[in-house]
Image (cartoon, rainbow, N blue to C red):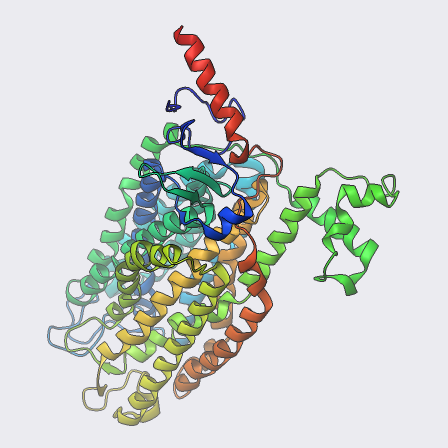
Amino acid sequence: MPVTGDAIDVESASLPSVDPRTVTEENYLGKPTEEDLATLRRVPGNIPIIAYLICVVEFCERASYYGVQPLISNYVNRPMPRGGNGWGAPPRNDQQTAGALGMGTVAANAVTQSFSMLAYALPVLFGWLADAKFGRFKLICWGVGVFGIAHALMVAAGSKDLLLAGTAKAPYFLSVYILAVGAAMFKPNVSPLLLDQVTTTVPTVITLKNGERVIQDPESTTERVMLWFYLMINVGGFMGVATSYSEKYVGWWLAFLIPLILYLPLPLLLWFLYKRLILHPPGGSDLPNVFRILGICFRRGGFAKFGRHGFWDLAKPSNIAAAGLTDSYPTRWSDQFVDDVRRTFQATGIFCFFPIQYINDNGIGAAASFLSTMLETNGVPNDVISNFNALSIICFAPVLNYGLYPLLRKMGIHYGPIARITTGLMMSSIGGAGYAIITHFAYQQSPCGEYGSSDCTIGNGVAPISIWWMAIPFAIGGISELFVNVPAYGLAYSRAPPNMRGLVSALNLFNSAVAYAIGLACSSVIQDPHLVWDFGGPAITGGVLSVVFYFLFRHIDKEEYVLSTNGRPTNLEVEGAVSGAVQKEESEKM
């Protein structure tokens, strides 16, 4: 007999983390044996409809964010085009790009990188506040409110009067940095909120309708929902095509109005979702206990033991009690919590390799944008080409979700998160090498030689190379993100204690901030004539670090993927819960 959602209140009854709407007494077989783990096919668990609606929320937010982000470089770098329409658009059939402030490549790179650095660094603060004080949903709503203010100011910065008078700087820079704060409130909380709706937390044996015994697998479930999530991020990111064409052919007012329009559904969507979500109230951050555990481990084992086998065991209550040190080291946690902390530190170690992937994916700083100004556009906005990154993700994510990954599971091949991330790191390095090769030939053939991106006015000002060649490294970089960022979301959520998931997700994002900080620090050399090595150096580094990464972390692929619960009931206990719920339902009917 099916156990309905009305029969079991998962939160109030403290029952197991299995979706009660899909579990039956007949099909639930419980914990897999070693033989089951080795032989049974793994399948994703049920993904509730509400999870897909959260993906739509992410689409709206990312569409409004990425509709703006690619435009910053042209707006700050390039002057108002000669013979343009006064709104920042160049004349038709002209090789000029849209512009506004004319502050040059160094200033444009600094603004671009500082904007993105804030958007990915501040989540550490807001992720902690969500865990400890306010809850994820409230921070998301506040971020959406801040977004609205930023978009309104940005539309004002596209005013023809302000552009012609040279007074658009103040509203524009205010809007850019307010937008960064809003994104920082939103971003670290939305992926944990999404995974809060997924109820499969440990591997579970079930019987399908055709009689096949399979393992309902939390790793496969997380992988599937996060691929949908990442797909919607990049469908939103693809809205940059519309804003890029708008700046080129109409002007800044329309380029900034489109992100505002894409933002408008967000408040209504959040209002609709509020009473339909599984919302975990803030439970106070576990961060103080993490520092206490680190202190005990260092005092008992010394700094030389950090990262070695047995280091974290020194803070386990069972170990402390066995050593007779209970009075010296009072504990407020369980052995399981210490294991969660160990897994969290492993995850953050993995994240430390991600800046090089991001740099190779998009080019260090605004180097890719500068490269695009050296190539023939033939009517295509120079910054539209970066959208091939999102387009490749949109096309390839379904291939992974419903093609490659199910095929590998059917064949019994475990393509774990470390193997996937290594693949992504190597692919991004290949993409970085592609940028370097294109830049080399652009310098060779530009009428201005190695100063081709510096507002070249000789001839038509560009090398006789089509900008569409840049689609190749952009696409390779985009596909690499599916192998790196999607597993990273799952690692950040699954390996963190429940009251630190917002913070650990923010630490994952923080590595993008590190990449932007590197770009900001290198602003003075991200210009002609250094662009070849601006791409080539990170590509070589990324190839080396890919190998180092795999040998450091490959053991994690051998671990069984579970979501940390820190004492909360898991779906291993569902047998008793299901039976009890069925008996209660039957007794009430009698």
